[in-house]
Image (cartoon, rainbow, N blue to C red; front, side):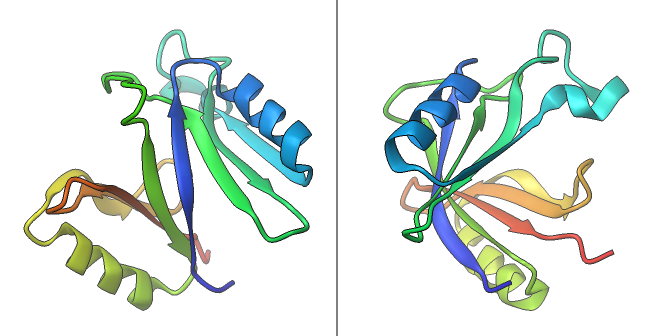
Length: 137
């Protein structure tokens, strides 16, 4: 899979409804993964919340979204990030190094509970970036 760049929207508990709405508007295939799928690691009150959603359309549009994780403030107007994802670890780590330099790392780029390597940072211009390297194992 080639690397991709797309918007990633955070919601305050209604990600499922929002992503289903966008599917109704744009068409395509919607996949949703809930926090509850991770058993004992599920934050309290998040059993029915969406940890990751992805809508892919026949026209080549990709939109990702999720419910804001516990401990992070949801602020409409500042509830989006740019997502870089794929399976080329060297390429994506290179992007990460450049984006996070002189910025603020909120989630270090490391293996996560869903198996991928993931990190989140805010670059020196105030833009939030998420980098996800797909698990090859």
